[in-house]
Image (cartoon, rainbow, N blue to C red):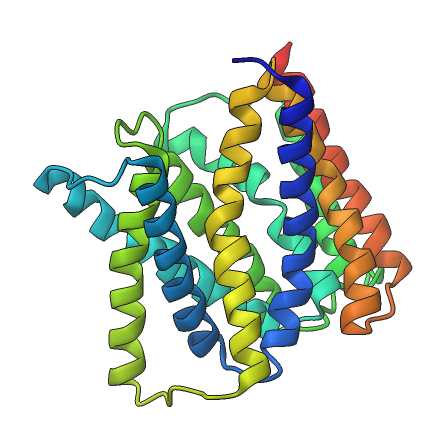
Length: 290
């Protein structure tokens, strides 16, 4: 059922929430380690998704092969992906980690060549060059000739997270299980992996209340119910593009929250780099649609 007003409402609501999560990551990591944040957030998301499935009356037990698939997917996301991403946020300013994570669309194109046997066009190659030029601008604070990264390990982790997310996305193509149900079982397994890692690494279960509140926010919105909002927006929209294009508002709005909530002074190199990254992504999308 097409209802474009509802589509834009849920789409803009999703974009607004996603714009706040970079700040939530950074603020929460002042009180929690990346693993602690991931544990509380993942547990929260699992409960939220369970409640959503109950309300939608779509909770069911899938076949064993689907559970095995979720066991693998849950290792990638939420366990490995968010652990790497949170560590990147722990090492980098939020204004750097957030735009770098947005290059996952470019990483997906590169991975599609060997994994999906897709060919790359000259337009896509140019888009990749433009976006990764933006990565260099952000990670070197504009000092391109020096190639001296502000935190090389943090930059590597932020880019590595895009690789993990792209692999996860490719493995979910042509999935027959309901997307929310799949996500729920992925998070069930992921939460188990995170719990076992906490136990075997002797990581304490932090009781820092501000960090706990941040983890609840991250688990509810970044990992949980926002995914349902986005699916709802796509369901009501006349075309996918009419809603999907809203996502380009998120990184710029995110910088506003990072400045006022986290207290980071937004550098000109961050804005220039972000514009280059998004320009590459938009150019790639336009070239693909031709």
